[in-house]
Amino acid sequence: MTPLRHRMIEDMQIRNLALHTQRAYVQQISQFARHFGKSPELLGPADIRAYQIHLIQDRQLAASSILVAVAAIRFLYKVTLKRDWCIEEIVPTCRKPQRLPAVLSRDEVSQLPRCRRDAEAPRHPDRLLCCRPAHFRSGPADAGGDRQPAHGHPRRRGQGRKDRYVMLSPKLLGVLRDYWRATRPKRWLFPGDLPGQPITTSAVELMCRKARGTAGIEKPVTPHSRRHAFAVHLLEAGADLRTIQLLLGHRSLSTTARYLRLATNKVCATASPLDALQVACRAMAEPVPAPA
Image 1 (cartoon, rainbow, N blue to C red):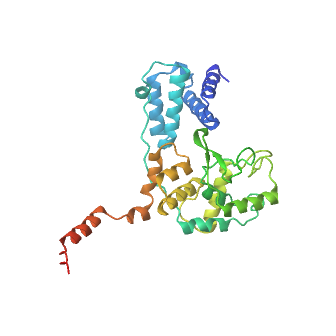
Image 2 (tube, rainbow, N blue to C red):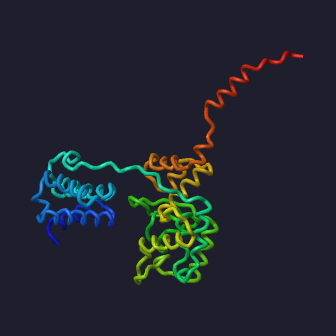
Image 3 (cartoon, rainbow, N blue to C red):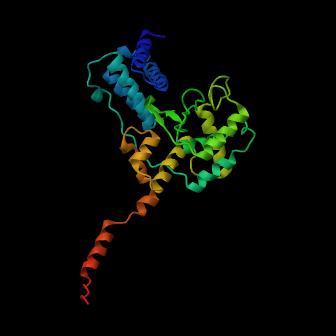
């Protein structure tokens, strides 16, 4: 390990960045250095600009991937190398397109649990069934620690390492209890293929793809698409944005408000103020009956 990489890792650890973020930043800086065949300490603004053009034109990366590379380069030169640049001008970022995801309908969501009845079911229960009611982001489910307090609401550690309490339906709790009695997991509620390790995100995504094919659903099915469906179905059922924000663990209410664009039933069923105004005008125009 080079001294620069070691120092950058220490800087990320001091700031308590998530392990996944640390690995992504190190990978991006390694690719950045290999592209020029020299240490990033010897590179300047012109090289950074050339590398960004390379990512866009030659590698044709998506905006989300470019944003990760930009964040890693900004961290390296601003925090680790402490360059006195105007980092926003030297390392500009790109705009990420705001595309509306395809949301599973209630019928499509209900079809997925019935598809998981194959040979893997005794060892890996319906992970898809567990994702939607608990509205978790994809990640390991810890069976140990203070995750099931006495009042019956599990605690979930989400993005930014922020704990929050989440709902757990009685039906899902019964499924999990039956599974636990049958398998008696030790550390991890959903163990992976490697001993002592949880089920991986890629394994969960593979189960989603299998269930999608079995159910004959054309829309993409991922753990996060079930999370989208959970939020939209809550909105259409009349839940307020603040409650959904707390359940999903969003830092900003504006992030939750994006689901308003997906809740078509709620938006289309909203009465126009013009209709109410017309009713009021007709009521005012009607003659008042004379007293008897």
